[in-house]
Image (tube, rainbow, N blue to C red; front, side):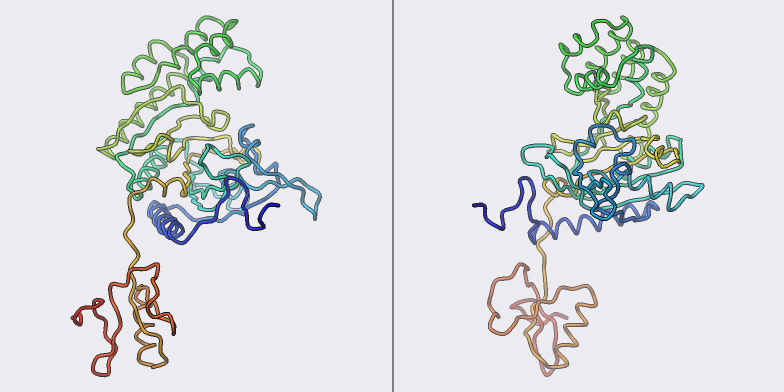
Length: 393
């Protein structure tokens, strides 16, 4: 018989040390987003299924837990991604004419883990810009993502750029059904040349050549030059390559030590993105720490199909690779009902300090904090001094 306290696979409690790191990072990232002008929203954990899956494709559908609402009988979903909810808020609750910047941070739930050691309950932080079609919004989203990762001290950072329009441009004159397109996307994502050859056997030669070229288009600035030679020069392809160059140049100017690369066969979230995409990696991360880009179709189901760009990351995964955090420090104080002592404790707590009152009978127990200072009674006054040292000035 299973223990009553055994949790489901890939679901875990967050214990104090990790919870403190998560909360410190959450606050830092939200403060950074606010510095850019993003407003915090807190969507519900579950809502009607069709709203959660709007314009997101099959991938998110498979990630989403589904249940029946006992009040209405309708299908509900537990969110696997917060972006559709942000689009709903922008379209129906705020309904602003100009630019709207929204950010969020909360748990999402996935039916399956992304990897052997991954959680099924990521803590998703994200930021979305609605209402601006220009590259300035793409740049701002990427810059904020980089700033957030810099705060976690996971550098040096590498950003890989791609664009969903390249595949659409290559396949512009090729009739494919949804299943065939999904198979091509999978072959490109896995860089499986043999599978791609089999899937494209009956395609026109320019499309076959372009798809094979995408597999090789990974690296530095030379990738763009090769792409201009080997991909069909239709408006979609040319616009995508021009904009990739523009974004790369501006990111290098904004973050001089950033390594910028291109991975034109990166198809992550292909059904979701409509234009430029980016993935950011840290010094010791093989998986992307943040992903984002443009997804102008996300609000279509809500009747307000306006430009949208943003990014998201998992705070739990980020803390696993983040730079070391300093040990928590506190002020040690005896427990007592002396009004002067209690006033001193409150005064230091009001100044943002952690003050641990030693409860009777537990004066010498080890604590989760390092008590580097203590409140002591000197000449009838409660004063702060270094632990075990002379009185501080």
